[in-house]
Length: 107
Image (cartoon, rainbow, N blue to C red; front, side, top):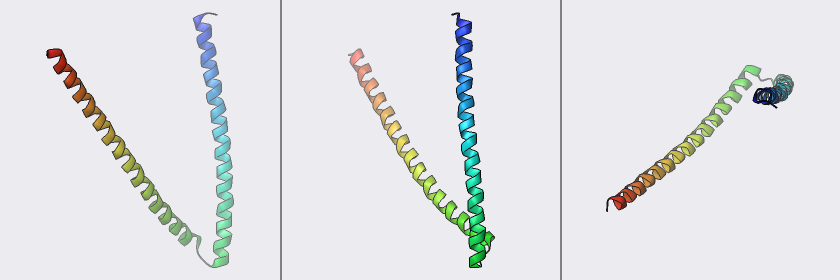
């Protein structure tokens, strides 16, 4: 098998895999859209039964989601800061080690 044929086979296989993944994601997206519509319908019915406007309920849900998202973002920021500190320590340790090794070479 020539390298050109092998390359075409690899590319073709990669494209088939990408196509398969896109189909799976599209199906999941469709499922999620249907679920969202079903939940919106339930929400409208519940709001009407309780005498609460859907707009007020939606605004309250958005406020809660934003507050929760803020917590998640702060937690991820802390994790990133910790990783950055660890990386700096590792970098400083590597520099110190290379300095010591360099001093040994000079001696």
